[in-house]
Amino acid sequence: MFLVIGYFIGGTFPPSNFTGAAKESNVMIQQQPQQAQQTMKLQIPSFTPARGSDSAQLNIVEFGDYQCPFCEKFFQETEPQIMQNYVNTGKVKFYFEGVQFVGPDSLTLGQGSWCADEQGKYYEYHDQMYSNQGRENSGWGTPDKVKALAAGITGLDTQKFNACLDSKKYESRVQQLTSFAQNVGVTGTPTSFIGDNQKGYIPIVGAQPYDVFKQVIDKQLG
Image (cartoon, rainbow, N blue to C red; front, side, top):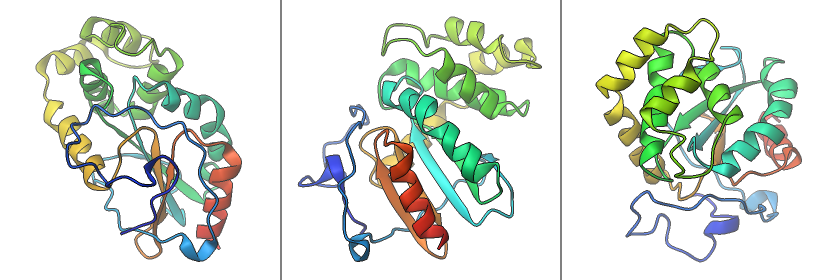
């Protein structure tokens, strides 16, 4: 068991009645003594592509929903600094796991990421969707809207992408990733885990500012 911080304090983890329809986490992490920051084990799915060098010392694994406004906040405000200072310098690898927490369209948006991945455009899709995110459950993530947004990804074969999305071939994968997230204690998005197989992973809940991530990353790198 690892330390439950911020939003999760005082509740069961995860709740026994959890269905996946969780609200997003936008809480500030509670500063804890270093010795209290226990770690957990996390097995990254082998099919998930990463940003960063294969020789990186550390992993960041973000569980996010493409409809989640706080995930978009993390994408706009915190992720660029992590990329610049840790991923692009070869110290950290970044993994994104798209899950369905917000609503039905989240399942379609998640499937689209894997259709884009077939063409090596997983993170181009990630960036495109968060750069053009609409309001939660407003219909911006329907198949037709996803296809239209994906058409703006440079170099994407839209005919192949559209056929893949229509086939729903990755529906079960998004559902499995959602269950995986629940099993490791995720009850809101974004939730990130920082670490590796040797040191274990420390969770960060919510769209925390860069300094919160920096503190944990530097601790794990040290």
